[in-house]
Length: 291
Image 1 (tube, rainbow, N blue to C red):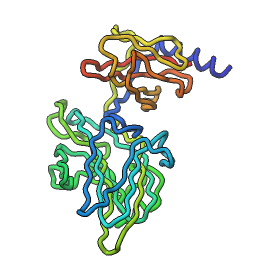
Image 2: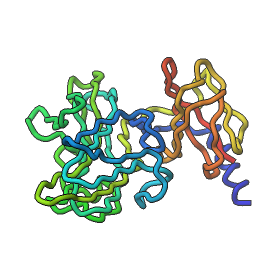
Image 3: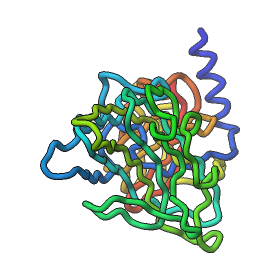
Image 4: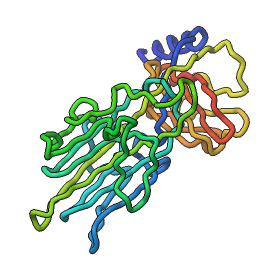
């Protein structure tokens, strides 16, 4: 009975809703796969190199969901950088968040945002225009945070240099290419070996809100209404595009590649959702109801 009531309410909202929806700027922030991320490894010769994996499910941060990014290492020094290029609007505020778990007592893990591109094989230490480290949030056991932490970067990190929310540099309203990266590692040559293990999930760079108005015409539609296990999407050039699914609070809850004009929605709770479809020639918001 409750499910039917929720569906009826959502259907009514689908007819009448107009409002604002926050934009998620990160691709693959659920860490289920390496899609959207570039990986750089750094370690002295000889090896070992650190082990890393996307979609790790043996353990995860409590604040995460599903598979996570997992990194482990035993040695004196290593570093893993995962990053992606993102086009932001200068002068606009962006909110950074991410789930984190560290099962170790000697390491660092930091979220960095910069207009300076990482170079493979060179430690990425970007600076701001004021010559400060371009660190949004960082765990660092040498400075007193991170050991056996199970929480989030935004709530539990002990280093935060960039303003929060983050404001992209440049002339207000202009496009600016930035690099969003997460760098984790260990450095300790005072002992034979140090063991570290970290898990990262639900990484987000939430951007400005966009208007959502069901009265505007669109070439893209979703069916059936309401959807049960599969959502079908009709419109030009959508196969291979990505759909980011948001709840009515603006939180991204799922992300899928559109295959044969459909995506699975069986794990969603009943209610109203918005899908942002992004592809080579597509940037569209659709609305649908999950039964």
